[in-house]
Amino acid sequence: MISLRGVTLVYPNGVRALDRIDLEIEKGTFVFLVGHSGTGKSSVLRLLYREVKPTAGTVVVDGIRVDRLRKSRVPALRRHLGVVFQDFKLLNEKTVWENVAFALQVTGAHTRDVMRQVPRVLDLVGLSHKSRMYPNELSGGEQQRTAIARALVNNPKLLLCDEPSGNLDPTNTTEIMELLLRINLKGTTVVVATHNQAVVDRMRRRVVRLDDGRIVTDEERGYYFLGLGQTQVLSG
Image 1: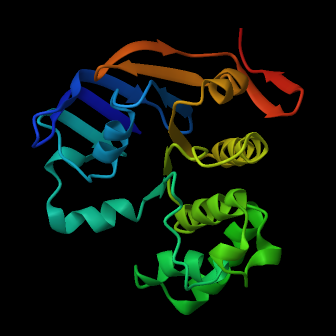
Image 2: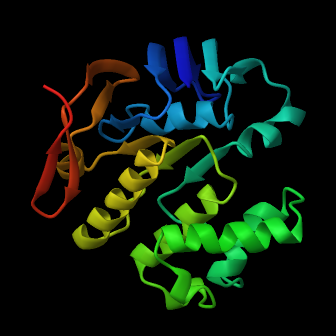
């Protein structure tokens, strides 16, 4: 699903965000990118949805050489990805339903597809009963669920999450991470950049740790978090 080979990223201001990293992520997996601020976690995600291009190396997403992709083809790439940000990025003048539908409408989706897909994802994230509410009427966790629904409405193969629980309290953080796990178990590849070590330790998934723009550890763990006090063995 994802392949980064010899990737270096130097921003125009001279900051070396990534330094010759190699990373392979298989389809259907759940991976955490961890490390303190400035280690390169978000930069990896930006490369994957082509907000930036690498200074050197290759970036492949679902068989597409993203680093060579023409600018005119970037919107088509992003229609097959879902991206969730820490600050939600919701449209305050639109309802929950309208925020989610907008992600389909900008791609030219037919009305019947909008009417079918929006209820499906709102049900998945548990917001069917709040579809007519506006972002400022929602809790932080509900706003993040709306953002996740918007990211999922195009049925993406890959979901990229940049600090998705950064603005949430512990209870909402747990709920959002459980939601991401359920999405992953339905077959979507999920990559989460976070500095929340407690979440990482609890969920027991693959953890790629970055420091100073380099991958320093890549650990596959054998358990995943199901809920408060519940853990299931996956391997070893």
